[in-house]
Amino acid sequence: MTTLHPVILSGGSGTRLWPLSRAALPKQLLPLAGERSLLQDTVDRLSHMPEIAAPLMICNVEHRFMIAEQMREIGVAPRAIVLEPVGRNTAPAIAVAALMLSRDDPEALMLVLPADHLIGDIPAFHAAIRTAAEAARGGHLTTFGIVASSPETGYGYIKQGAPLADADGAREVAAFVEKPDLATAKAYVASGDYYWNSGMFLFRAQDFLTELAQLRPDILEASRAALDQARNDLDFVRLDPAAFEACPSESVDYAVMEKTRRAAVVPADIAWNDIGAWSALWDVAEKDAAGNATRGDVMLENARNNFVRAESRMVAALGVDDLVIVETADVVLVAKKDQVQDVKKLVDRLKAEQRCEHLIHKQVYRPWGWYEGIDDGDRFQVKRIMVKPGEKLSLQMHHHRAEHWIVVSGTARVTCGDTVTLLTENQSTYIPLGTSHRLENPGKIDLHMIEVQSGSYLGEDDIVRFEDIYQRS
Image 1 (cartoon, rainbow, N blue to C red):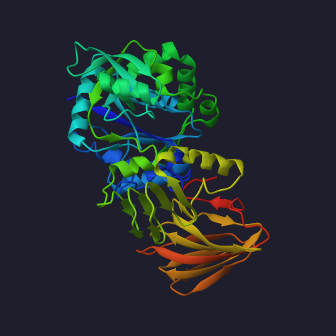
Image 2 (tube, helix red, strand yellow):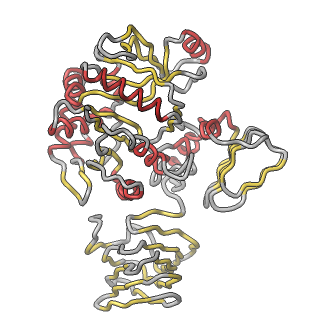
Image 3 (cartoon, helix red, strand yellow):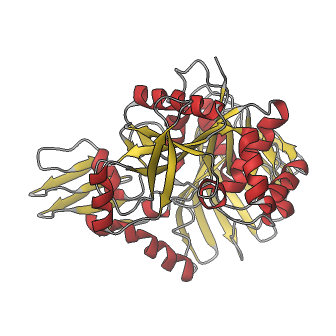
């Protein structure tokens, strides 16, 4: 049985699912359609295939600790977690993965999967993977064509060609087609010769590198330089920033798949959804008798065909139809369901106005736990802080602020200058401006505390780190 090496691409930002998906916590790391994140589901749905090896993960450097923690939660030890210093689209990411795998085995079969898709029919997906593996062993660069259930204008399409002689169920690719207008999409679906382009692939690492060397040698050389100069950081592989930033940003479709003569497609009827907008979640969600899909504390009256998600408080809607309502602690989105593809325009406005709501939530995750802003004003700021058992913040100091810490629950070990103190529930301490300090949780339960900052400048960049177990700068 030939081993398959999953390559999980987790570098996207998911702006069309704002305000839940944000740069610091994108959609693939969120539990959008169940209790686990899309990333966890992507990895776990391969777990019952005996030929599957440990996944190789390619991700944004800022998400590394969350991805490592999510893999720990489902009991998966990745082959490696490779950190991109900047986003360069899918061709460079896949090139880096192919170079890593080919160093151990040039014949390695790599199964390339985005981290943010839903797949409802797992047995059919596994069958499609095995068909694609057969085609890949024959030297083909194989993609998965989703059997189109409707004339979608938001997807690219793949036109099938003749059946492959060496892989039953796979076909040559006749053409890759850009996103069509509605009339063209209807004609594609009616013909039965076109599939949605899924962005999933299976091929030999060396075959991909050979084609990339012919078609885009600049991408290959920059990716090789970034990997050759990479360094290990805890459980992560950091690509060289200068070399990777110099790499052209290009999708694997444009760089290779649309130009190679070795492209093949495996039809896949697998209940697939790329969750490209809030309306896609309404499509796959369970609904009440009036067609409403809800999550969280939601109360509806005389309402039909709505998608309503409440994260932090009750959302009530009366006499409305065909809306998307998404509530978070700091933003409420209300949109017509047929216009949610334009949510990205709101995100672009936030960027242009230099606001922060597209970047972070009020609750900000850190490798040691999280913090959340409660209140702020002239020369003060109040935060809730949670530190996981056994974790500790960096040994640090601030130039512009002092801090009061009050323990709400759990046990805190506090380093303040040369003094180390244990604090428990309802106890507090004071950290003077300019004093080195560290917070640790030596206990067995989460540490919850309130931090009150006071000073002339309270930005997160006023941190001088002396020691850090997470090796942050």
